View 1 (tube, rainbow, N blue to C red):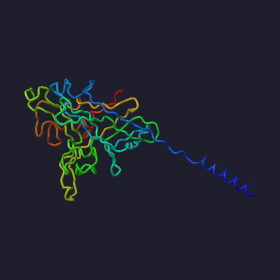
View 2 (view 1 turned 60 degrees about the vertical axis):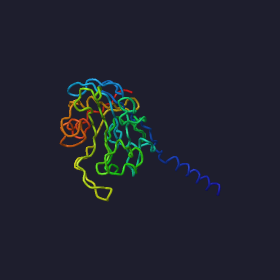
View 3 (view 1 turned 180 degrees about the vertical axis):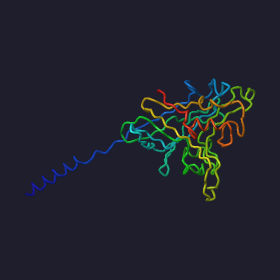
View 4 (view 1 turned 90 degrees about the horizontal axis):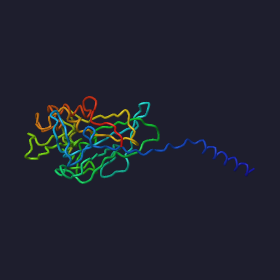
Length: 286
């Protein structure tokens, strides 16, 4: 009788194990970014031709930006959040919020002004196994992590080059194009800055005050067709400045430093998806 009971219990255990649902596996995802001008790659020290309304040549001086709220999109249109890989010099998850710094400059040549030798072209993480057809993300640092003391934060949120102030938060983008002739060149304003970040912020978090910003200025990007296994994301600086004369200062700071009244910011905001549909990012073959 005892033998029969043991056999029955064993059979029941096996049946329960067999009936248990399989644990879904995660699949690894690398979203790679590459700097381009139209169809041509860009790099520090190599002149870029045909930029802006006057088709100027320029040097790349910087090309960095923060990416957050990354998700892959299913065929049915559902956005599935990407869980970032473990923290590194270029990515961090804090309080459940993931941020990656894409750094496409290497501190050499024309990028030596404020650049660093380290680079990072990848957002790395995992999603539940499945079929995905597109991707979306935000250009910028989410509010909860943006208005913090940069030196006290983990990398990459402690980057001095990407910091503004506790009140203003981070530069979401640090993209800079400079006169190839340097100080003796023909540009009236020697550098065209694209420093996207929150503006109109009040309140000092260092003293416990609540911060609020009139203009969040985070860019929204959605690629309806994107396969990270076969494609990468091009960051097109030619499209970014297509509506600007990069050789002069049209008002306020040179280029766009996110002031809502800066005439050069209207095109930048639209290109990054702050207002309207973004045009800077596109899927290209690896």
